[in-house]
Structure formats: C-alpha cells, structure tokens
Image (cartoon, rainbow, N blue to C red; front, side, top):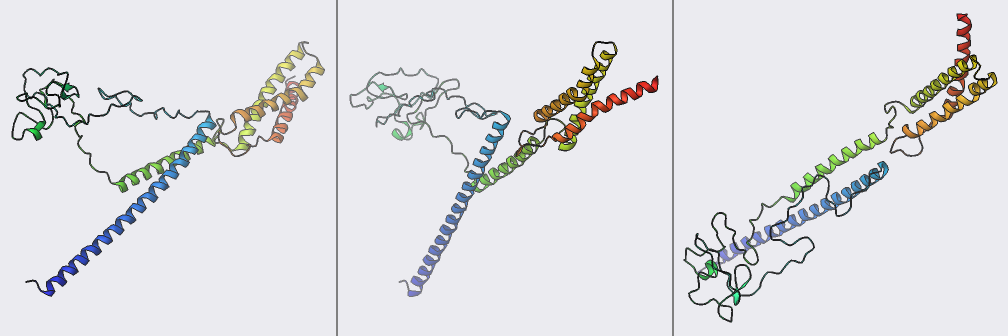
Length: 317
C-alpha cells in the first residue's frame, strides 16, 4: 500500500513537470514573438528597399517589371505532366468509398479499363456490381489494406521500368522535406538585406556623379568646360581673321563676332554641356554651373587670343 510520502513525491514530480512545461511554453511564446518582430522588421525594410529601387529606376528611365512577370534570373517552372494549365479548374479527387485497383506488378498484360461500376485506378468506373463493389474473383483490388499478407498487392501501384504507373486518387504523399530553422532563415534574409543596402548605397554614390569628369570638383569641371568652349571660339576667331585678311569678311563684322558673338556662343555651349553631361542622375536641387566664371572665361579668352595673335604677327614681321 502506498504511503503518504509516495503521494507527496508524485505531487512534487507533477508540479515540477508542470512548472517545466509552463517555462517551456513561455520560452516558446517569447521565441515566437521575437520571430514575428524580426519578420515585421524585415518586411518593412524590404518594402523601403523596393520603393527606393523603384525611385532609382524611375530616375534612370527604367520602368518597373509588370506584376505577373517573374524576376530576372528566375528559372521557369515546368508544368507537371497531366496537370491543368494555369488558371484552369483543378478536378476534385473522387471521394467515393469504392476500392482502388492496383497496377500490375509483373510484366503481364494490363487489365482493360472497365466502363461502369466502381472506380478504377484512374478514376474510371469499373465493371462489376451495381453498388460499386468488385466482383468475386476479380483480381487484386483495394491495395495492401484490403488484402493483407498478399505479396502481389502493394499499398501503391508499382510498375515495371518504362511503364507509366496509374495515378492513385488523392495522389501519393511526397516525402516531407527537412524542417527549416526560422531563426536561421531570418538571419540569412537579414544578411541579404544588408548586402542589398550596401549595393544600393554604391549605386546612389555612382548616381550622384556626373557622366562628364566624374572625379573632378564642380568648379574644376565648369572651368574645364568653359575653357574648352572658349578654345573652340578662339579657333573660329582665327578662321575669321584669315577670312578678313583675304577680304571675305569685313573688319567690323570680325570685331563684332570677336567681342560678342563668339564669346556668347562659347558661354551658351558650356552652359548646355554642363546641364546635359555635368549633372548627376540623382542630385538634391540644381547643381551649380558657375555662370560668372563662364562669362569671365569666354568673354576674355577670345579678345585676349586676338591680342596675342596681333602681338605674335607683329613680332614675326
């Protein structure tokens, strides 16, 4: 007969098990809360990344992919043989309690598909009794559950090599894949999100550089552009001087183009070049184009070049 000490030890054991169960449930609940919080954080982060990428794509003129289009690089999913096409209704599996005939297990001739009665292996009614049950002596039916101990009857249809097995209503259950660790998957997703952030930052830094002289400062770039345009103006001025020397151009026209026309054209050309190729794709506000620097360079370069030409010509004479 059990004593009071046995009952007390059992009660203590049950209390300890209950406390351990409560602690385990609390720990699991905390783990689930942490996982849900991490999933929500990653969802918000990926949503922000998607919006930023859409903005960058809109800035560079790349339209977003249609909603139904798969992502670039994704392998197309091959349709399962015999499966309905996308959008087609999926036929329901038969729910009748009639037994299912197994496929032949040897190389013998296969039985002809019956046309009435119960259900065959492919869902076609089989010949037999009106209530759907098989006739006595009609082959092996019902699988291993209907005929235990019979080696020729299997739980699922078996076929010889090169022979297509008949489909079982409801489908053969596929082997279960190994369970994934949610924490490990979230950590992997977080690492990929960090990599995406790093690459997007690099893209933004590259997008903040103009196509023309990207490593130069804005003032140095503007100075180089205005000097180049003024140089082209000086070459045109020299052509006009030669034309004036042979009498094809008047002296008044030459001075007008030298003092106003060519410097103005050089300034406008430098302004347009800086606006087209000197502006970054992603920039806050309007980048400076230094018009005063352009006026100083263009309107001084051409007259000074003409004065230098006259001095050189007189020195050579």
